[in-house]
Image (cartoon, rainbow, N blue to C red; front, side):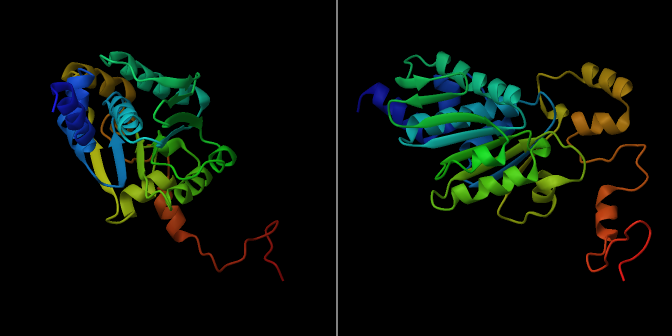
Length: 257
């Protein structure tokens, strides 16, 4: 077997080796574990600037390159965020020694000659429902993605048995991202990544941020913790637990007769 063929086989079987040898990117320990995992459901609870977008872009490109006819969807809360993550994927393409053949490319999508497609979409349930049989779906900033969009995503993986990745900085104890992290069961492989685990973020910077932001915002942005605001009287999960579904609501202060 030729050396380049051996390298291609190694890269196809090992996304971490693909990142190191083909893209020149050395993954952090948690990124290495994520890339090598075969889990079909993964949640990344990450600090800001921890490298989640970089590793997600690697996973997306790897799937498209080495699994022909794959449909890779990257879903973000807004068009701007969709574009940012897609640009990371395109940047990884430019790092390859031999660029893949692209039969089509636009601002938010690319089609490879092997039939694979990578599309970056805003989180609109109506848009999501137009796709099926996805090989990989990455929900970026999932704590900010509407639950209706998440409901629309899941059925498209039924036939393909595709991989679903939810990744986000936490944003309170609400929504599907929090629920799947806290009580989604053993189907999920979970990665918790704080800023202290990122070698590119200095302790001095984190100390400055803690002083500037205050404790609870710092814990949310850099500590990867689901926290409530310090001016909130009751935690959201306590309020939800106190709501009785079998009691009719009051109308203008009067119960229905």
